[in-house]
Length: 543
Image (cartoon, rainbow, N blue to C red):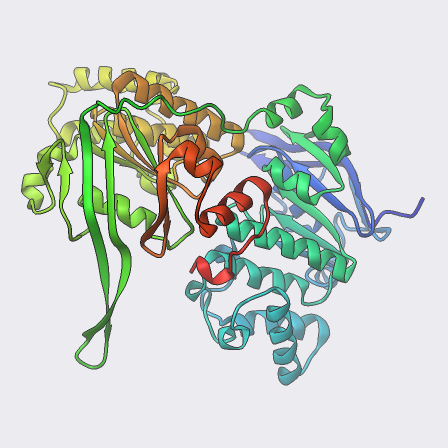
């Protein structure tokens, strides 16, 4: 048998803390053969990324330590290897793509400068040769108008485009091993399908090996030859991909496979009262130019959309980044200016002043995508939930408000004893439950849920969806559910609106949209979401 390209044996990673050492990785072993794709699968906190960073020795040493274990790359030991040797390997023989390209790319340097730097360091190319190679790489990864993008900065690109730049940078020196750490988590389904297809093609083109780290089992099935399932720092199961999917032996693997958001939306009551209605809603952002900053055109973020939501009903809004989903939600809540009538419980609110809207704010709430960004790090969970009660003068005194906080935390599946802790002490799923509790404690009638599950593991997503369905049934809540994850939308929505470039492409009952889509764009979204197929969607869509 041929010698593997990468061989990890009995690897341990400990982190020093004031309370003693924390074992993040507990003696794992795996191999990656030449031209092979190995997937490391597991939920957040399982040790996947720590294992990957150990290979390149990029952990925060000496806080991080390897009490035992070996990492052999082409037979050479990498653990505690001298810096010159590691620098020669990093980005040259072993390259890495990170989950969030915005934090991995330098915001102060152009795309050209960042890719050129890799070529200067490892290949010693001249500026003109480096520029030609950079242009070649950007075309290779399918970046549209590559020659015009050379002088662009990361913030001027969409998520899909930034990820393509990251891949181009990683491939600059034609590495032998590519480590891809959740490279598609934050992307739209169509862009995700394109990126996966691209990585697969490039792997074959360059004869690379790949270590693919993800919590999405659909991606694993499409990309990997073999799978290692990680849980709490250990590999609990490994084997050929098909064998793992067809006959998993470990209970944790079975749990992961069963963790897809499932179930169906509550049956809609067509006679239920209308909670929220918008008619021909428009949100135009002016484009100003010239010395006098005159308006020369408009960005039509929401362009003539009509939506109606009844008590106990969920309307799902799907589409790629930049389609206007979030803008629609914010406009309906009157958090941004818009044109067109908006009704809340039959009352026109589109022309009300802020002071007139304030009493209604209690009944119209929002849960954002990133709970960490929407929860104040300086406030305890109790203070975060209590803030709305104080503003709206609910609960007569501190003891009554505390009672309401305890009750709502129990409703969303949180331990009330933890209410004096701070957001950073909770997991992503727990923080999202806090955000839901903050909205729910005010007993609203209408909640805008803006990508509330996109940053969560599949099993946690399923829990949050079950929670939202249960709360909806109990309190007859009306939801506007915004997401680009169609599996999640299917599990909770009665009615679906498909948006693109501010307009409605298609809308109707959820079953009709998912099972019998009429428009090509909707069909492309479905193929990308459920089959991971890049059908009829261009990179320029998600700008």
